[in-house]
Amino acid sequence: MRDLREGVTYVWTTPTMRAAIWVAFLANLTAYPFSNGLLPYIAREVYGTGQTGLGYLSASYAVGSLAGSVVLSVAGGIRVARLMIGSTVVWYIVLFVFAHLQSMPAAIACLVLIGFSQSLCMISLAVILMRTASEHFRGRVMGVRMLVIYGLPLGLLAAGTLIDEVGFAATATLYAAAGLTLMLGIALHWRSDLWHPHAPANAR
Image (cartoon, rainbow, N blue to C red):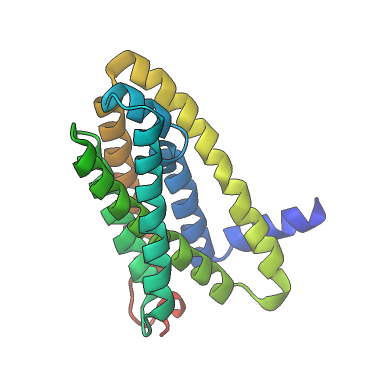
């Protein structure tokens, strides 16, 4: 518990890490529910498909994630904080489009893009945390990072209620709009730590 307290304090008092942790929490709360827990519902209720269709949807998201990881691993000279912001914005924009699709092929293409942008965002976020944290605190910082996945069950619970009330498209639109707005707010609030080209998080 002492280590956890120290990790939380360290993250909270380091602006770059605090911004990255907020991005991770926001993604788990408002973006991951649609590619993780709700995908079986989407396959059945929105596209009227069964297990095979769900397999295609899940695989397309995984292919996009793999492609993003490969691209980022071979690319060099990237300002990772800017990449994190840009890829998260793209993630929410594509999620907004995905919310209104009725065609399986278009949904598969969207999920590839969602997986791709998700991968760029999360890898960049991890790089920022590891680059910013001192060697002594890296384990504790990554432990705090793992705790923010609890935003996912909160997002899923709220989404289930909202879908019953207003439908899938409206719920996904609301989540995408809220996520995009809050992400831009994070980028604006911590612009000197995340966007400035000479910020440590953007070191090449």
